[in-house]
Image 1 (cartoon, helix red, strand yellow):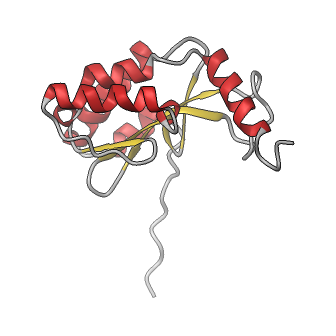
Image 2 (cartoon, one colour):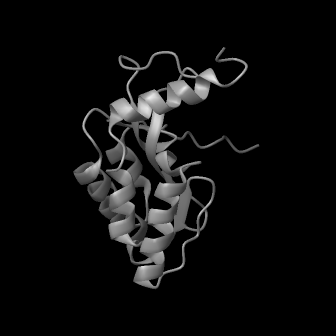
Amino acid sequence: MAAKKATKKVVTVAGWLATLPAEKRKTAEAVIALVRKHVPKGYVEAFGWGVNWSVPHTVLPDTYNKQPLAYVALLETKGGFSLHLVAAYMNKPLEDVLRAGYAKAGKRLDFGKACVRFKTVDDLALPAITAVVKAVPMKTYVERYRAARAMTAKGR
């Protein structure tokens, strides 16, 4: 019986980037740079379920899952990446910004509930992504979260 290969758990953005093949790393670095440049003040970058920018527990300790409240996240997928723009989830004006930006750029928007799936930076409508990333200040995001949470059974 062969011994299992020990794998080191990735715990940093740099560590994660180092695990990616060169082309994927180039794409991830470009998206991370874009988010870092445009994410509103207060959100904290970390590595957890991908690279994420979240509301820190010092601001919002009582999230539904006891984790920092995600605002943007970049994850590697089998086919490329998914960029989770959580503020666009159930937010028609922000979803419209994405849809209009992609239409204007002549690009196909592969959009889930809050994630944009893509393979390379060229697949992204960067002005639309930028607009969504910088759209919601942390204070507003926390207020929206608390209002939505108050409407749930567990939040009452």
